[in-house]
Length: 280
Image (cartoon, rainbow, N blue to C red):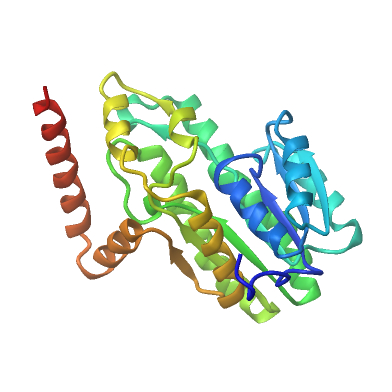
């Protein structure tokens, strides 16, 4: 951590959902190193004690852990009530999410409900319960973690991309609404990050697992890249922040030539697949 960041969040209260692994863990650690008081939650209770110890070791002022299903309205309401007993958070990071690969023809309604619950309703609930309290106080920052799929959705990730497009749209509207209250809103869009999400995602369709592997096999960027982007978001308040060069490139192409980015990425994927099949 740089000198500029060390101690930067001393006295700040920070909420991170889905914090026990991957991007959420990296974000929580980054704020811990900045001296923040952390309120972290995850659906997995097994990893939370180790996370609490790690965050304290890294410099967090205090750490509060909770087992929370972000897709549950009651669970998020109770979590918010617990966090806000001593005041609203200074930073809310809606990070929790799940992965699902498959086209619409292969995705069941149960799958849709599962991914919408975590990836969209989890963010909606986080914003719904925390934002009014932050607005009433007149300061704070909300960071919603979306994805490069929030502006480009490949055909094998239809449901996942739908949820991330929705998070981008939610963040855009919320940013305009909360600006007059002194609360910033940023949607952070990582590219292909080296986290457990690919191994843990649901895959639908006989041919999809190889396609998913193609998407994620070249992941060279760590969760710390996203954590650093979140810190920049809180400090500089951009509306949307891509993270990896892939994400920046696709975002730029989508804005300049909307049809070029998807075609180019699809061509690169097909070329990569042919090269793998040609190997002995």
